[in-house]
Image (cartoon, rainbow, N blue to C red; front, side, top):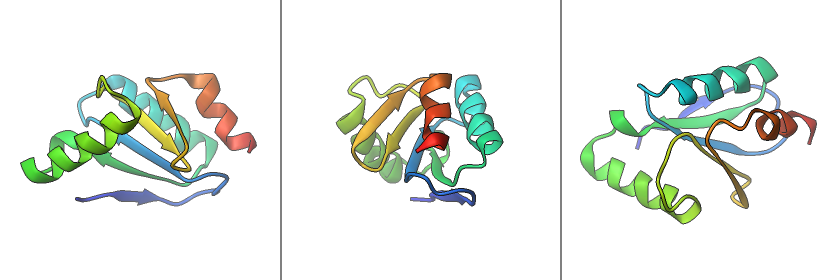
Length: 93
């Protein structure tokens, strides 16, 4: 599975599951970039089928609806959708 790393301030470990065609996913990536946070992301719609199945299974552990964007933080909590305040709070940790 092709996971892309973006360098920045590592306050927490952020994994972003997104779709390349999703406007809310683009806004989430832009906000993480604006905040200067380090994060990893994967565009589910650009994966080969077997990798996409693995990624969906990972997402469903956190977000049973498998909606996007899904952000997993430190492997302990999840933000579903573009929730600006919750995302901004990651920079304050």
